[in-house]
Length: 87
Image (cartoon, rainbow, N blue to C red):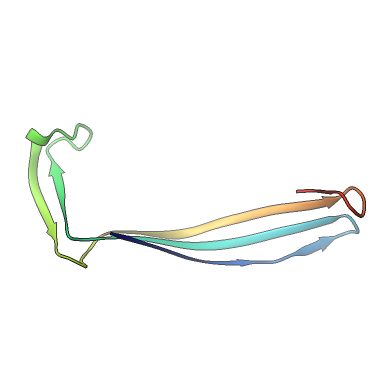
């Protein structure tokens, strides 16, 4: 099974009467858990079952893979009129 989590922070910056900037930053994490087998191939670009040279076994609940990182975000909105916005 896998688990995905993240946290997001943002701000709203008014630039003049019509323009609002919305910068943000997200931190994401993805974890893949066992039980599972992870194979090592003699040629990683051509994953042929006959070319397996090693097997890593992850027990139930063991972390097989984990990826995390920051993801910048940005948007803006512009007021054309009191009732019409461009996003």
